Image (cartoon, rainbow, N blue to C red; front, side, top):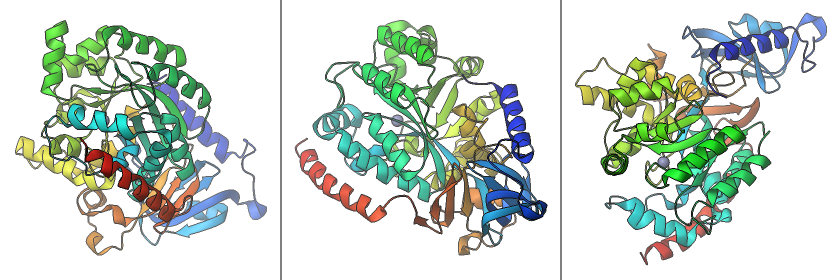
Length: 472
Ligand SMILES: [Zn+2]
């Protein structure tokens, strides 16, 4: 289901032609010869992230229904009679960002047990067993999704329990999401038996199969938390159900040692041996991968999610992303869960990503600003194999885009738009967010959900979690 690059490009061209030719019934020619659109954004600095990295000053974008009808100069605005026009006043319009690895519901645990060793097994798993249910997953995911929209993400890729609740939260907020139900080798909050997540996932995948915003997925937790037989079972199920697979991979030295001891392979080779290493896989972290692993990941067309802020905070290491990009791997950026990365702010980690790679190589030239903006947008879309639909601003693609304030004090002057986005912008500069053609946030105000109510609900819930955590 992934990597139909040529076919994808063709699809975009066909959709663009259909839209421009007004033949799809979605749009019509308005009086006076102008074509009709639902929304036209004018007077924008359009950062397209297309194949030529076009940046259009004084540009305009026309949106019809859920799709981008046209992207170009000021003439686009004159060609369309729009129901609504947004004058961007010179602000940046860029593709909505793709957060390729999150556990959005874990906002409910943000800041708990930070800085303690072996936190996953000693703290997180027992705490989850005590408090996680569908209701608090929903509430936590609502808060997480709002945080992501506020910081310019329009798509997130999630792994957790009760993913049906995460899917419902994404829909309520109006975000696009790939939601992977966790399969793990011990009883989990939503499964009394080990590997019960697989049965949950089958139900959940059937329910969400054709949703326009939500793509259901399978999420085997990691090579070391499932046995070989069940990893193979997940691989077979993924092909049968035709869904993406999300996994944590090559994240710690302990994982490398364990898989080497048991199977005499690297975790990447091991996942290949169980049939999981293919183009539907999105592998988070990939910190401890060598040149052979990178070559294998490339051959199998695996998408990689790079979570540097979370990885550095945990003292794990820095994934060799420069080498991955040089090898032609599709790499996107992720925040990881808010218990690991503490925020879901993708805009906030662009600069860190560039700077930490420069520091690691003692070379200011590596990982230039445009590369991190690329990974946050079209790179992330490629990593999750949705680049035929999202990740760049091109006619025919889905209208997922954000408007970033060029008038903020920290954004003046702007000699280089990529440097401004990567090194100077903060999430607070994200003003307006459009997903699937719908305005989800306008001028910093969420239009889809009651943020104050979400905050109140999470506070009630987390008062209880604090009591439980004190017992651990
Ligand atoms: Zn994770």
